[in-house]
Amino acid sequence: MYDLIIIGGGQSALACAYYLRRTGLRYVLLDNQPDCGGAWQHAWDSLTLFSPAEQSSLPGWWMPKSSHPFPTRAEVIDYLCRYEQRYEVPVHRPVDVSAVSRQADRFQVDTNQGRYSARAIISATGTWGKPFIPDVPGRETFEGMQLHSAFYKSAGAFAGQKVLVVGEGNSGAQILAEVSKVATTAWAVRRTPQFLPDDVDGRVLFNVASAKYYAEQRGEPFDAKKFGLGNIVMIPSVLEARSRGVLKATGQIASVNQTGVVWANGKEEEFDVILWCTGFGYATGHLRPLGRQDERGRMPTDGTRSAEVPGLWLVGYGGWTGFASATMIGVGRSAQRTVKEVVQWVGK
Ligand code: FAD
Image (cartoon, rainbow, N blue to C red):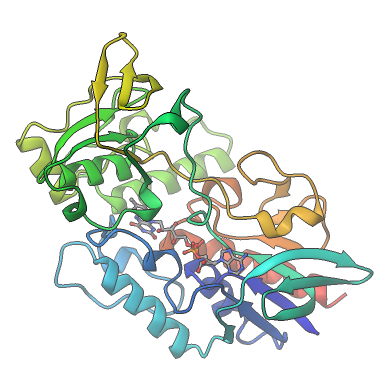
């Protein structure tokens, strides 16, 4: 019986663990991965942070400087693993949580390694486990290969093929940039891709997001149009793709057929591969026994605290549960506030 169980072992769970160190609470992290690093273990090989190391740190310990402008995926994983060791974070892995339910004054946590119980739960399971693909008519009839960006590793596998990249966000732009070097590509979008100015990176975005947040707290208007927070960051690979002229959106797809797609203008085109860079829902399936969720996996919350289930918090799910909490620099604030609330609640 623990005071608190944190479900997940990525950057959000580690930020919570940092603030738990001196609370005296008996707690454990349950993570279903064989190794440390959370979702970064599954990201594509060339993925980097949007900001330099000093703007990308978890609470307490700066990420070591990188020899690249932005830390690489391998450097982020190394940092997260060393962070876990440094603060002696108690993690049980691999432990997959299948269901959390309420039993009198405690939660019952069912896993593939047996049953745990705790007085409070923080769910910090991220989004990577819930890839989202839109319901485009005919999608199931396509005879070529379909892959979500969650499973994309590198461009090599697509050499010489004709590839349709779907999605106008950062994932779509970054994957298009590298696949277009080895394959013939087209880019399907729902709206015109919005590129940030070349000199705007994660630092600027975080500062703008903070300014917007504080203006909202004060009830003041804030014009964030200049830097749309979901817009494409011009990292070096994307800049290079622009110079090759491949960052041109073809249009919207109306449907998929056996051999390719039908564009919104009625024209048909054949493809070998469709790469869906269409985002994620929330990996919260394990919380379903506790109450209703929408189609993306969200349940009612007040900040990070569940609005309907006393003793349950949700940390690191981005705009849903905490301002900028899907980033390393942003999740610290959310984690600190959550741990304060948990300590108060368990202390009752
Ligand atoms: P995760 O890292 O997903 O960790 C959750 C952990 O919980 C995982 O290990 C998962 O396997 C485990 N888990 C899930 N379900 C269960 C279960 N039922 N039982 C047990 N364990 C479970 N972030 C930044 O900070 N800076 C950036 O510059 C940045 N750039 C990005 C660029 C792109 C293109 C993308 C796609 C993402 C970027 N991110 C960036 C975001 C970052 O990758 C994720 O937001 C981050 O990994 C979320 O951390 P987390 O700890 O909340 O979730």
